[in-house]
Image (cartoon, rainbow, N blue to C red):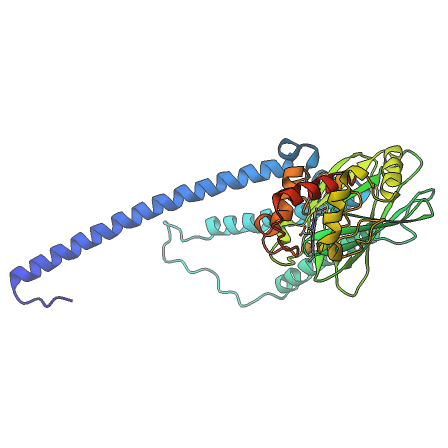
Length: 386
Ligand SMILES: [Cu+2]
């Protein structure tokens, strides 16, 4: 700080202080203006998101991941629970904030009597008891309702509708894709494996077709969450969890791994296609057949079998029996590859095999920068795996 020696210096010093103060208050005002602007932008953003959540059909069409648009009794129970909890907490919110506003107004210092002291009260047993007991009671009621809903959505023999044709599937979570082993439908054993796109039959009037999933993990914890079909269930290494749902609505349902599981967690998408029972049975018999063996792509098959692909991928009916990556036996029946990241086109397959790390950095498939002629043959072969 400057030392003030004379009258004139003192005057200058005061002036500079005043200028500094002016500058500061201007900056403060500008800052506040910016703050208000970004706050109002935030508010607008929040309102827009809320509007979309309340009416998700605008944004996602039939592929909505919204819990507000349930397609199964399970998801409907969960939505009802959500609204109930919002209602209870909403009433509490309005009550508490209302009382706060009332007390602020009613007991603020009065102009007519600025020196009045409020009554000095030291505790009140009835009030203490009330605000301990009432919240406890509210939490208790919510817990009871949650437990009830848990029973409603839980997979167990009593909750499965009578006269039903269950489809049993083992789901294995991998970093960063989903494996589906179909092992029983309508009481008959199946043994077929696919990846990332789950195809299920819809139930009909009088015939329920419950989808019974057992959930396991090949590596770390994942979580299975297709919001329109069911709640989240974790896939935990060394444990088998269960999940079930049934829907009467055909359509595409989307979801997402809901437990952080490593770098490509966000690209571990879930896709469920619910189709009519006839269509499902057709799909099932296509999937159960061995891989197409088209002589026109024999050269490409040779490339496939000579590379290390076979250590990680299975193609039924060939020596390729790897289980590290998705089963490729009926690769062409899937609309997307890499767990929903890119569509299943010859160009994308080519780019994927050339360098998966470029598309899905960190994923567990190495790059194969094959020469162009070999790549053509390989992609043609994969294209024959209908
Ligand atoms: Cu995951």
